[in-house]
Amino acid sequence: MSEHPAELRSVNLPSAADAIELKHLRAFVAVADELNFGRAAARLYVSQSALSRQIQALERLIGCPLLLRSTHRVELTLAGEALLGAAGPLLADLNDAITLTRAAGGEVSTRLAQLWNAVLHDGHAGVAQLREAYEALNAQFPVPEATKVRPVQAGGVSALTVSAGTDTLPDFLHLHGGGLIAGSAFGYRPLAGALAAATGATVLLPDYRLAPEHPFPAGLDDAVAAYRWLLDQGADPGKLTVGGDSAGGGLAVSLLLRLEQQGLPRPARAVLLCPSVNVVAAPQDTPVARWLSLYSGAHPRTDPLLSILEADLSGLPPTLVQTGTGDVILHETRRFVDRATEHGANVQLDLYPVSTHVFHLFWSFLPEAADALEQIGRFLGSTDTTAAAEAG
Image 1: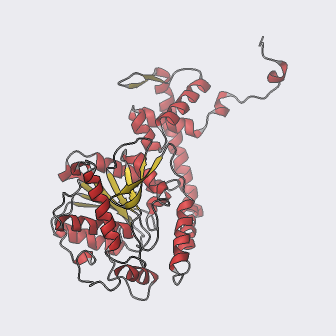
Image 2: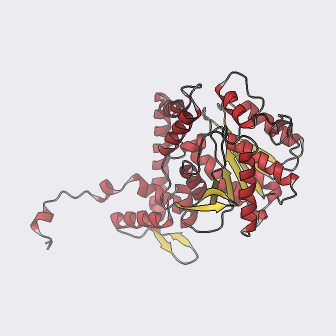
Image 3: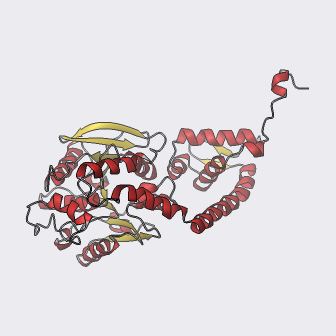
């Protein structure tokens, strides 16, 4: 008979099957697939310690060890192999059911539209209102567990470093989106945290100056200063990545062109997320055209650092470009990729079946965004920079 107090014997404790949660099974399957806690944690956007706790909880609930761990390897026990054989198809069926349900109800598309509409509902809104709405959009997304954020002065530019719990020199310079008039390093912590978790990189997020207070080339000058700071700190250009999303993606290309002009060592790779590179030729009388005109100001629009689609793109490093099939600026992204390819640059365009701009922002609930982030991790993990854009 149990020696527990009577009040505990009366508690209706759940059975092991009732207590096991999907997060336990997803954690186990990820570790079983990778046979590596670090890679599995990055895949799930959690810390290794959190992942270990989930596995330990699952083993306690089932009542037997599922994994054999040593300093150098992870192996499945016989019980683990049995669970993997059953859990894999179970989770696949569940994912299929969720996908079908979402497709039938249009839940994801509706949610994405609602999130973006909150920013773009009034194309005539002032800059202050747009900035506030863009910050509110990003504030709705979670920062991955165990993300470490630290403020730095990167060559005189206020910035944040974002990593998956490590404290290393940044090796991924990301320029945030926002039409070059909105957005901030603080607001982009969720996306930068997801990038860090998926790639193992430490991300540097500069708070580059924004238009209209600071038109071209102020933001570009800040991006160059941040890159120079990385070099001054001892960063190896052969291990650096420059990236950006939306208008920040276009700014990242301008940065790469400026580095070539100044004879500075280029980074090993570039990652452009739904890049907006059509700053000077956006359709007239549209909100985007009005916003971007604030950035270009009175500067000659023939400047190749501003008119990217007219620039010589032959000096780009291996570049991964990701966008959605329904992105409103897909046409200009394709034009950029085609022109870069014509100039001999090694550029890969990955298309995802989504209809929203910068879908990566929605990684916490959009499967395609999580897949895209994992692909970035594979791209950065390629050791052959000449073939990096073919990493799959």
